[in-house]
Length: 193
Image (cartoon, rainbow, N blue to C red):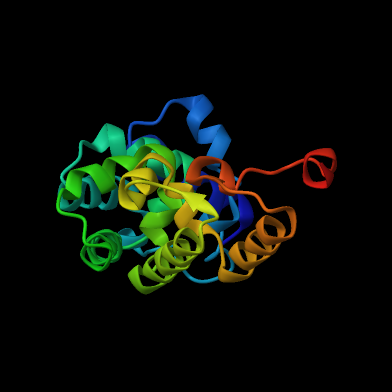
């Protein structure tokens, strides 16, 4: 399949989801949507049926198609990720984190950090354990860490190395802070103060 044919199928598939032209233009070049270019996808109706995949994933998560599209526009791999995998990732993370209200995690992820829908539950849980350890050391001030995470779900995306580096800085400068500011990028001036 030629690049122009692939692009035409991709654009059609995105429009079939109900996206507007400016939304399609925003995501059509995302590398995650081009991973099969050069492979034989010409007759693969399952691959090109983004709309069914989006509707099914939304239903499995218990959200509207419109809400799920918001997440997919911010995290384009969701257009091509299996709905069953999205559900397994979300529900697996909910179970491992011990969250009793599923909809709170799903809403937080969809509106604030949709990449977590593509992350393995064990990875998310590992990041949570890192955050618990940092809180126990006193560098993150939190009355309820899970509540803070639901307000700042991006905190579940940082690697252990990134967290360790931030702990090192907190130890070095004897700083404590709330979860929402622990991972914020700091200027050199702030770090050296």
